[in-house]
Image (cartoon, rainbow, N blue to C red; front, side, top):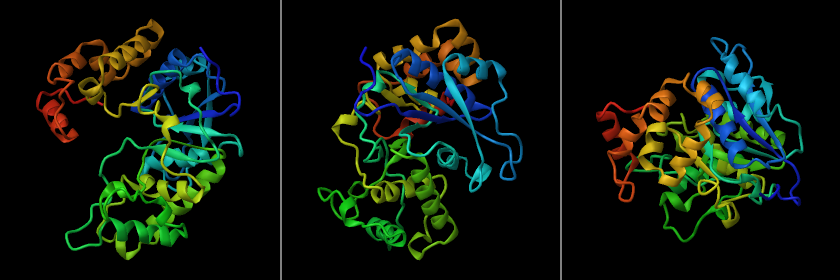
Length: 334
């Protein structure tokens, strides 16, 4: 298998772990990385929030077997402080974790609920030009009937942040159609310097949160705050939509599965088999089975029961329909 692109040099893959569900998601992520990209030459960093005033308890991983397995899989643990978000907005962990990384070392961040399914080290990242996942739906904003619309809402945020708005538009889409505007899923993103990226994200996120503008008066900020700020920061740092060279992400090289029930309902047979390959070794299985949804879905045939509910070649249009059917059958497990 090919080594990491020698022209781009080593880089860090970063995921966030905490006690509970994220512990086991990170184990699955790390195992899949080592299985499907064994030649990845960079560091796998497991970022862990420290206890502090923004957490009501200790957020750190509390499963020693999982921690030992992650170390065996070659992960480095990175403790970080939560100074801006904490338990009130756990999605902010991904940004505060970046602030604890060394400057000027390229990184790729992945959400913990991601499965590596191919040689991701062969992805030719241009770390000078940040980008992020386009595996998103029309989740934000939700313009009120009498306005402001998408255009006015996004324009106001860019103007507030001092970032040029027009270059971010996809002019092939009509005015106020959501895909005209730069909007990402924060399931993966990358840049050449984690501290620069984190500082910009924290500035934009806290400004949106703490200094509301009229155009956002009718909009929910949670859990979308990171995804609202992300396009502004990507544009500010000279990036934009991912190009074709990154097609393996959210494709052949990685899958942001999000909810295990949905993964079994929607994934291809090939991708599902890759999950089973990763989970099969006894040392991996033993730890994953400590998480009840993984135990039931992967190892006790509940996942196949979900899969049997749908024709994967003709899935219902809209994820809500799929979710509701799974829930009606009592098979909804994250």
